[in-house]
Amino acid sequence: MTAKTDSPARTDRPGAFSDSDPVVLILTIGFILVFVGASVINSEGVASVIGAGFSWTAQYLGSFFQLLLLATFFIALGTAVSKAGNARIGGLDKPEISRFRWLSMIMCTLLAGGGVFFAAGEPVYHFVVTPPAFNTEAGTAAAVAPALAQSFIHWGFLAWAVLGSLTALVLARAHYDQGKPLQPRTLLYPVFGEKVVSGRFGGVIDSLCVIAVVAGTVGPIGFLATQMSFGLHELFGINDGYGTQLTVLVVLAAVYMTSAMTGLHKGIQLLSRFNVILALVIAAVIFIFGPTLFLANTFTQAFGEYLNSFMTMSTMTAETAPAWWMKWWTVFFFAWFIGYTPLMAVFVARISRGRTVREMIIAVAVLAPVATTIWFTLLGGSGIYHQLAGTFDLTEALNSFRFDVATLTVAQALPGGTWMAAAILLLTTIFVATTGDSMSYSIAMVGAGHDEPNPWIRVFWGGAMALMAAILLYMGSGQIGVLQQFIVLTAIPVSFIILPSLWTGPRAAMEMATEQGIA
Picture 1 (cartoon, helix red, strand yellow):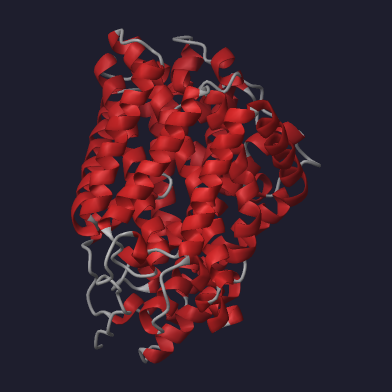
Picture 2 (cartoon, rainbow, N blue to C red; picture 1 turned 90 degrees about the vertical axis):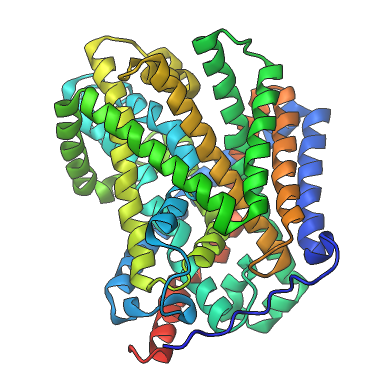
């Protein structure tokens, strides 16, 4: 197989912003200014409008989101096991990035930040508040496996598959084989042709996807600042206030902006590898020195329950479950992942050149979710173990959605106590940093339309998201929560942008296989 030439990389343009689509730049910066400005002028009004939109979306589009994720997962698996799964992305004989580095970048940039933030608290929440798919008595031994299984449905196969399988195939085919830009608009190229790539309509599509990612990334950045501030106060007596939160934001932004500036083959890879190694060390300590037998048995039972009740949990609606529960759990998470999808697909397509279609889909839609369920079992399962044993009671904190309290409480009960808690705070910080650097890089790629965007544009987007988080935190962490609800609204247009990938993704894989003489 001969390597195909790269698509044109317009890295010779003078100036940083001359390398960015003005439509994307204007609309995205405009959104940041309008959201922040409106929040400053009338925060309650903004919260009310977005809250109403959130509720409407959850009620009327929740089932659509669920079906979209289910269809993506099963179609992606079908594509992986077909003959087209042997096709190589980008026409290279060998991958550009080694397997460990590639897998590290996938793990750290997709669900990493949110997964670490929710891994300790969500399973305990479902343990003390029985999910609607089950009828076990809350807080009992019988409720352990269903609690973890419910967490798995939110962070498992469906979430990962939508983020980097079919959409990444469409982008990879169009970019590497047909010379189209590595931008969300290219997802619609198989449907609308050249006009969506070169026209202003394409700029609007890119803008909607970038806005969704900005909203989805600023939230974790802001919540990390509050979690770190709370954790530093509890562990080391440092003042828990805006000053500490701002300091955390500055340090975090400096790390991921530097990483994004140095690029895929330096900062982003190094940060991802360090984080994966740290996570493996923490996981080993928890498993070896924690309640080993309980964790092993719990994972086996919970994963079995996950597979057994997979369709029941995936298709729960407001008709069969409390509307508030569906809105704040399944629909919220699924909408969050949908909003992230186009730019995550851009990133996955960029780092997967030389991999086979089967490798990419299995890594993203199967291996990564299994690793996530193990991580949730180690942290969340340990939390359930201590909740069941009476070591602590997180019911009140979790009913108030204080996941920062839950994470720190569980961490302090793990082997190593304060040191383990500090290590998990560090891990969470770097996970959010890897999300920040990959999204800064991806947004810059979207604006530039090629693989190597101007380093200063990467820095600009990273700084813009950190500044937005700082302003909203100054107004109170509630505004970060409002922005999180806005994620669900951004998922509406994005869901229709990624919808055609259900048929264009498999077709892209088959076309690659045909051209490579495989099928």
